[in-house]
Amino acid sequence: MKRPIFLDHNSTTPTDSRVVEAMLPYFTDAFGNPGSSTHKFGWEANAAVETAREQVAALIGASADEIIFTSGTTESNNVVLHHYFTKYGVENPEFIFSSIEHKAVLEPIHSLKKHNQIIHLLSVDGQGNIDFSELEKQLSGKTALLGLIYANNEIGTIQDIAKIGELAKERNALFFSDAAQAVGKIPVNVEHDKVDILTISAHKMYGPKGIGALYLRRKKPRVSISPLTFGGGQEKGLRSGTLNVPAIVGFGKACEIAKSEMESDSGRIKILRDLFEEIVCGKISDVQINGNKKNRLPNTSNLTFPSIKSSKLASELKQIAVSAGSACLSADNEPSHVLKSIGLTDEWARKTIRIGIGKYNTPEEIEFSANYLAETVQKLS
Ligand SMILES: *Cc1c(COP(=O)(O)O)cnc(C)c1O
Image (cartoon, rainbow, N blue to C red; front, side):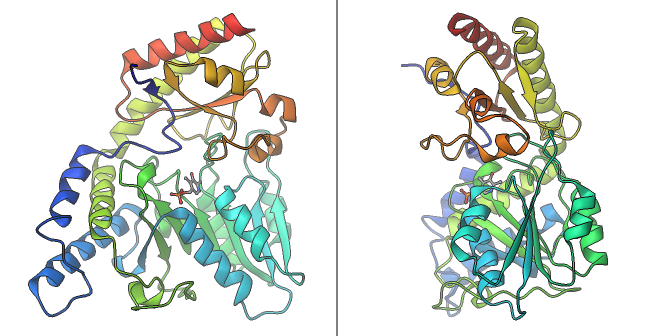
């Protein structure tokens, strides 16, 4: 069977061949443990890790000593939330998040929250943006952590992170952002955005799976977090365990490529996404585009077809790979909390699919896929 056209790049991306190329020597000849300080094997592995650390830092405007390698955004988020929910030395601390955080934020909160801790979940408008004045009201001297998803994985809505970071700074609140979908697609700069803690995954930006980073600001303020795992003291004691050198090297390479090519890739991808929506909307009148049309990830299209259930539609769409409803939880039947937060009913949330275009998709693929989707919706309605 011919493989479908992959249009689910918000769930993961193929690894760029230049990234694979860069990784290969670190499986074979240069297999050393970067923690070995007595021989060349260790030195060359350590040098490669430190180069990667600089490449990751450079992409987000950080310095290398502010980057901790982890297995990805889920782990990074968990370390951060574990610290602030279990080690924060203030009575009755308050936390602010949005209602459209990824499960990799909402679930740790759910499992860690204690009775004396107050959590404000900011609502979002119909486009998926938080209400700035609600945030202004909730931010107080008791806020232990403000955490907001940089760009939403389902609807693509980008928050006004720099404006929010400015307010957080004024109010002396620590600002944490899950940027798994943003980094590599749009410019992210921790200085400009005044973010103190930021989390990333390599596999969302053409790097390997199972590797990512935690950015922790070193100055003004110096963010200090307690570890979840203990052992050899790697990554400044924050994440013990022998480093995954090939994956780290690949992550670094993916960041280097993104830094030089992201702008042109995203420009091209946005044209494809807009073409996709134009074709679909031209053929189907009964369709709703979700998310903030003016400030959305360039690759993301979240579409509701009120005439058909997305589970049925997705299984019928054999020639294209798209996501039905909530991506990471395609297995569970709960309608997406993100779609509900922007005002969709359960029923409409179950009639929504997400398309995530990637840098290897061609205009021909996009034209074919849009027509094929529209025809399939017509056929099933
Ligand atoms: C993919 C994703 C995650 C989880 O990343 P992992 O690499 O699976 O740990 C977290 N947050 C957002 C916004 C994501 O898109």
